[in-house]
Length: 238
Image 1 (cartoon, rainbow, N blue to C red):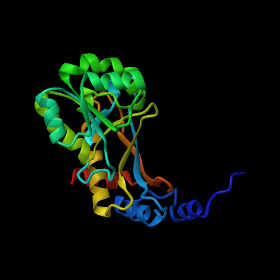
Image 2 (image 1 turned 180 degrees about the vertical axis):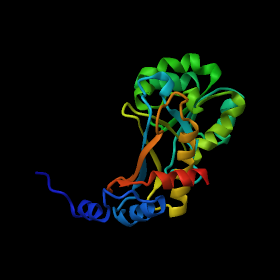
Image 3 (image 1 turned 90 degrees about the vertical axis):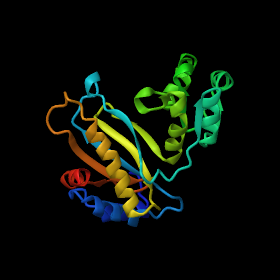
């Protein structure tokens, strides 16, 4: 039988799995239990009443978290000319066209966190699907990473500032990182509300029954804290 560490045991004792906590209570418990030497990531898991096997019930999108993710995001931009210059001025870490495409294609290089492309280059960038696709790095218009030249600067700034993308999994679960344990309780709550508001707005018209069925917060090394869905709905609607 596996032996559990003291930190894990203490976190489990502090969280009652039979209680659905308010967002305020959950964030307080989460921050109190984050005692690792590194700054733990705060994750949320949301169970939706959708069947992703049906294309018209696929929930996918992006949201700019008001307080960022607490992480340094390396952004690569496929662009040329004025768009490339705008990307560099906006803070992109890597900018190029054929040179970057060749580097990724020949070396399998993926030392970045987000990729953006101008529409005119997607014919070439699309060939990188086998490398970027499995890593979730492929530019996609559905999450706002395939844009026109005049949108490049704003897109780069949003990604550097903490814009995240999400996609519902086979079991109807959306997982997303919404910050770091060191962030204030207010920042974490507002980031959570921003994500939830976006998820609610993306509710498929074909989804039957209850859409928001459950949600839980956790840190990298912490126990899952189940949320009171009614309280979460109230925060989103406020």
